[in-house]
Image (cartoon, rainbow over all chains, first blue to last red; front, top):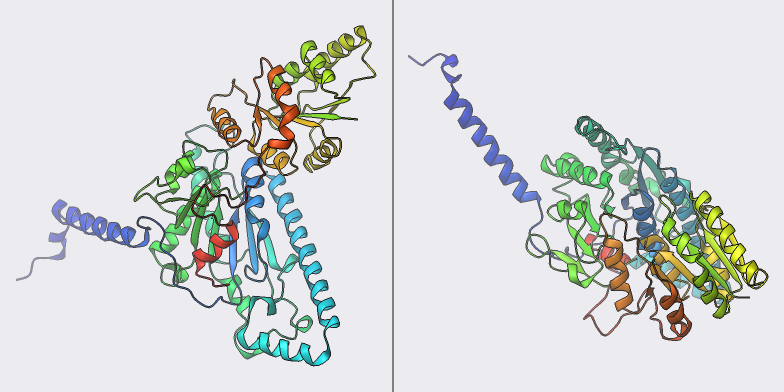
Length: 305
Length: 191
């Protein structure tokens, strides 16, 4: 006769169960965590819409982040989500200001393009348009600027200044939970660009609108340079990858880049020392910091800011 | 006109720098180097600036230099310090800054002589490290908060020999990449 199911409720069984769970979790972690130095991603066709999530934090970090982003191409990175900590009005206003600069730059480029088109004769325009359409070069794509293309999300602060250590785990947990919001989908309605304005863009009705899809999926790229919030956001992205939620792991979404502050010359910051284990790319800006972390993965490509 | 602009940081102003720059001997050194205007961004340390600048003005008056070197102060401007840096650039002046990376990065883009004074009172002093490394690369002059004289001396000839920032691809490293290129590469984007 088979033993009753209650015979399973033994310490040995629980230990074995926990051990199995632990082994399985470790294997999964090993699978999703990066190993050694960055290996180039296979070259692929650039999707029409790409969302990038940018973590901003107190004064210095925000400053450096916008220096890093100065050459951002809005035709490639069509949707931007800025994450700020609650009470950090400075970072939020800098994000708005930066988007204003992007918009002005796009208008300038459009104007130049129109002037060029006017200067050349009509038949040339046609053939060029057609050619652009055929191989879909970056110049044929519209600039994605304006309020439809970016959002600013506020996360509760992980730890307020002078907050007691006792309550910190709870506020961190709250930050973690709210971090899933901007990671899973774009926080508010980000729409597609006005297609009428640019005839070279394929009609949106032909297939599901790629702009729309990009706002309802996790970001392709997560950029951070070390404020406390960023550690929690990266942790949240790891959880998404662990369970492969919305294809985070299988579709290679949520790639993470960490840039160590320019102010760090000989020693990594605390965020850096934690995140060197789990981001896809770890960049430093001084040669002395090259080759740190597991497998010597910190990269130095010159001053980036 | 030749402007000298001093910035002390927004959140926790470096009061030692305000007192140091308004020291009589430093004022004399600035005057000798042709400075006509001394502008100090004091942030939240208005009281420190007030007392020190009153003493400084008294000193200048005693040497009847109050017209030759004008001292003024500004609060913190959330829009940044571009306006002040541009003024210094136009008047071939000088910037004296705390060692915060934000101010350093902003000032260097104007290609103006920059003296950086690390705050030695700070606990986790990576400010000093940054200043040392930047001086080694010839981007700026490192100043001592207890004696700014030598740094002001050096700033005169520095304009012509300072390195350009951000650096262009230099022969020193095998390859440099822009951050935009690194982003594309990470996602596997071509072009």
